[in-house]
Image (cartoon, rainbow, N blue to C red; front, side):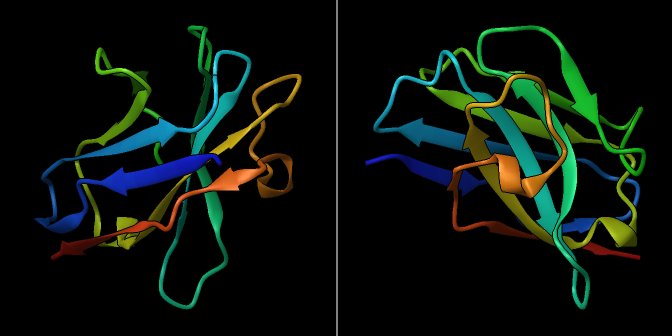
Length: 124
């Protein structure tokens, strides 16, 4: 059973930074693409960032490009997302996702496994 568990959400002031972690278990993720999505209040779920588990290429949404880094942690089976210069528009539930896709994808339909999400609130 694949399990993705996000952590690191909370209340952050605008201009600050956040670091979210996704602990993945129940599978070997070497061939997977890992991604972060988010869903703000009253908005549809949107892509944030993606990278291949065993790779260096990354893909970022325009909304976070230059402010976000998706990386694989030294801890076993953990992927992180760091965003700096936070804005109130970054307020959302952030989801970790995993999928076997040929290339980095920003489409939620390409991801098979999802975490429960972690709330991030950015105060102005």
